[in-house]
Image (cartoon, rainbow, N blue to C red):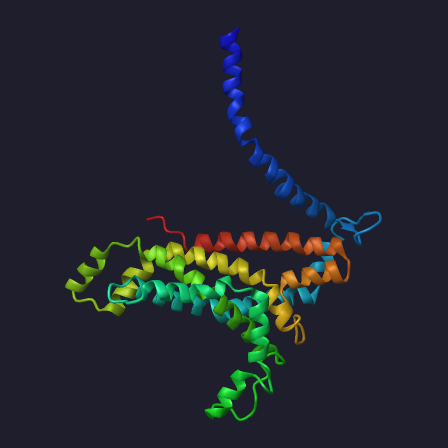
Length: 294
């Protein structure tokens, strides 16, 4: 009898130990997701009764030009900075991984510091730097003769997108550089030595050894950058308020407007659900494209 009771306790004990994780997951992750899906099927302003309307919010969303514009803006911003960030980050990581580099610790810290600084503070600094009339950037460009008329960094749709992209590049270059550096440190030095013996230059070694062997880390950075770009909120919110002409409107900024400015929580929840599905599909496609089965 005692042996049977002990066996039951041994069977139950592991589930008791792991139960806190599942309880927290259900309360703070699964339940909010399911509740958000339910809210997306209703017409609700945050108070009062929720009116069930089925898929009307989704039908309205797919015919909303602002939603498609927000996805287009995020795609453009992604293309403006992610390829540059990954390529420059990989070059910097290769330099910091080399034997001839001096002061590696200092440069790692210096490149990673922007990631620690408050994004709100960085946004206000960029507003001062990119001011059309008195900003430092236009003043420097004018003084060296590159421009005659000031560039409307935050007033022109394309320049506003470029400004947001450059701010995100400044903030996340060091972070991605460290991730790529981690991948480079797992590559055997013997491969570079063998390539050097065979007559390969450093540039050829970079393109034919470094890039292929760090492909998985590049994929990881690309997926993170994709999710991060489409989730941009603070940068466009402070820099441009989503303008001009909604040129820097992002899905998350649109979600914020619908929920906390228009109090249309049902419609905002439909944006959140579609955004989640879209990010999952894009991430899976990226992993499929870069899948290495060798």
